[in-house]
Length: 117
Length: 107
Image 1 (cartoon, rainbow over the protein chains, first blue to last red):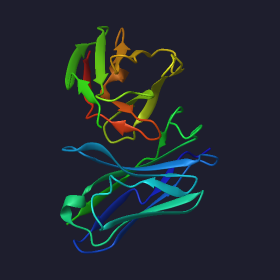
Image 2 (tube, chains in turn red, purple; image 1 turned 45 degrees about the vertical axis):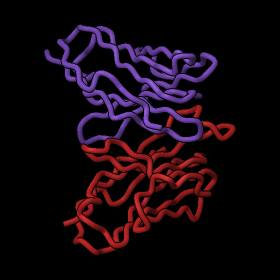
Image 3 (tube, rainbow over the protein chains, first blue to last red; image 1 turned 45 degrees about the horizontal axis):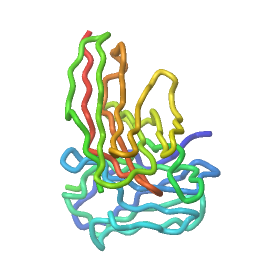
């Protein structure tokens, strides 16, 4: 298995532009998580999906952020409009959850380093 | 609720031991431990479940005190490859990570 695949690996964009980050989870995994990592705030959970349904989006910072999971093999995280404070590394992770609980490991993608100038 | 890790940073010489602690203010179903090297993604080390089940790498050991809502990760006879940032994560249906413990091993 190729693992969790994220694209692009690096993104540099100008303030005000729309940014779309993409994630392909491991086949057979039923949970998908989007995290944001910065020096100041650490590894923050933004949103997670179970069986393609958004379960908890309480970590999404504001309305400029949105996430979708149209099918079991693809998810997007969109920022519109982007701001310099959105600069961070964004990780996608997937796992095979049992009984609605995190009783197995989560596998992380390599991340997307976003820079908004 | 974000778990609290201690210490924030540790510097060891190769061969020395270290303990990293993680505590939560709410009842825990599971505790997850990950290690992240600079510029890389977090990598799974171990999961400890309520009731005593553990899954993880053979060379890693950890404890989980359900009553105290605490977990500790034990790194014995540290090697240079152990350097990195260690995160504990807690949660029922998702993982909320602590701020991490930076571990640096000197030769």
